[in-house]
Amino acid sequence: MAYTLTDLAALQAEGFDTIIDVRTPAEYAEDHLPGAVNMPVLSNQERAEVGTIYTQDSPFKARKIGATRVARNAANAIEAHLLDKPGGWRPLVYCWRGGQRSGSFTSILTQIGWRAQVLEGGYQSWRQHVVAKLYDATLPFRVVRLDGFTGTAKTELLGRAAALGVQVLDLEGLARHRGSILGDIDGVQPAQKGFESAILELLSSFDAAKPILIEAESARIGTLRLPPALWVAMKESPRIVVKAAPEHRARFLAAAYTGLVADADALATRLNHLRAHAGHATVDRWLALLADNQPQALAQALIVDHYDPAYARLTRSKLAPPIATIDAGDLMDPALDRAAAAIAATFAPTSATTLTTTPG
Image (tube, rainbow, N blue to C red; front, side, top):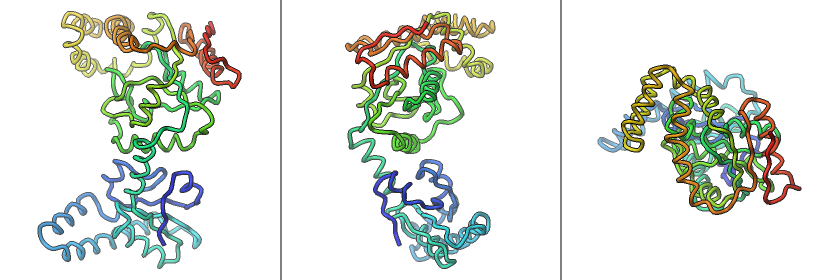
C-alpha cells in the first residue's frame, strides 16, 4: 500500500517508526526526507553501471542485473539494521520516484511480516512539496530581521533569543556559512535542495501565529540561494538593529574566528580575493597584520575598510526605521544576555510597534 504525502506535519503525525531512503548514498547526501535513514539498494557505482547498460545495451539486461544487486543489498541492509525490529514495526520506504527500488525493498519487508509502505511518488513527491511551500506560496509567517554591522554578535544573539522562547531561523547555521568573506563554518556547505529541506523542516515546527526572528542576509549565503518565498518575506519585514562599538566588535570577531586566523595561508587567500574591491594597498595592510599575528587589529581593519562601508551601502535603500535598536554593549556574556532579553521583549504581545531599547 502506498502512502501519499500531503505535508510534513501530516507525515510526522502518521507515526511511521522509520523512514527509509533506499536511494544511493550520493542521492541521499544531496537531499532526503527529514529524519530518513539511508539503506541503499544500489551503490553509487552500481546505479551508474545499471543506467549505462539500460541506455547503451538492453533495458531487460539492466533490469536483470539491477534486480540481483537490489536483492543482495536489501538482504545486507536487513541483516545489518533490521533484525531487531518487532513484528509491528511500520516503516515508510522511498526511492527516486516510488518505483522499482523502493517497491522491491518494501515487498521483501512485507513478506517478512512488517507493515511497510511505499511513499507514492518517492523523493520527487517531497521535492514537489518543498517547491510548493518555498517557491510557489507565500510564507505564512511574520518575519523580523536581526540587523546590524558585522561583528555585533547577531548569530550568538539568535541562540540566546531562542533560549528565551523566540522562534528563530538560523540561516547561517543551516547553510554552514558565515555569510561573509570569512566563509564556511564547518566544512562543505549542504546542497541547495538539502538546505531548502532543512529550512522547511524547521518552519514546519513553528507556530504560524508567532513571528520568526531571522538574521538579515543577502539573497545568497556562500553558494546557497535563499528560496524565493523566504527572501520575499525577509525583504518586506521589519528590522531590529544591534549596535556595538567597533573596538568591541573587533575583539568579538577575533575570538570568534580563531580557527581561521590560525590557518594564515587560507585566510590570506580569502583576503586576496578582495583586491579588486578594496585595493592592493588596503589588502597588503591586512596581510601585514595577519603576518604579525594581530587578529584583533586585523578584525578592526576589516570592519573599517570593508564590512562597515559594505553595510552602509546596503542600508541606504532601507527607508523604514527599525522597530528596535539594541545596544549590545561590550559583547561579553552579561551584555549579550541583556541584549537578548531586549530582543525577546520586542516579541511580547504588549510591545509597541516602534521601540528603542538600550539595555546597557
